[in-house]
Length: 274
Image (cartoon, rainbow, N blue to C red; front, side, top):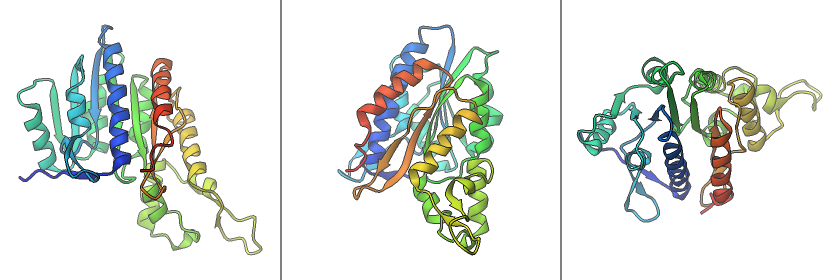
């Protein structure tokens, strides 16, 4: 099958740099401990992207991860598209530490991958949850948080949410889109964040909050519901006209990862517009 390469903008290139920088530090620290540290990419792609700016090939997160030194003990790459997982297998060659899965990460992660990163197995994991939409189940995020052994980067796809869910008149939204949002958020409490009916005479819901309010509410859920102890303020990834495409979140059970990511985030914060 012909490889399927994503075309990415500067905001995505910046995200790749952030994740690469942290993966390098993470593996360096974990390699000094008697732990099995694994790298997980739940929406892996083909391993290589096309730069929208230059038209040239650039390494994606799987290829960046495979070049980390010292290496992770295991690499787990998941994608729904078989041509993309095949491309990753070609990039990895005969490496026995690389595992690929053609399927839905919402099923593959809890059943096949997360169990490899338990306390009992002295496992630790860095997991990338970076879809281009909100087709990610909150149950997966909660499982990662409750395990206490997994750190995550997560794309909070505010553009998808704004285009398909957060209408000024919530009654006009397709029920399918509402179901997607409920699955991503974990319940319907996002409605209480974004809508209110006390400001008008007729009692109908009106949109009263913006992107940053919703992102902060999700950050609170990562801490209080999913159980991650450390969740720094996310980085807004913006397009060429300054609109936020998504927020890049990091969530971790340990203070060391939090400290390193805050340093990295602060280097890149507000550089998303390009």
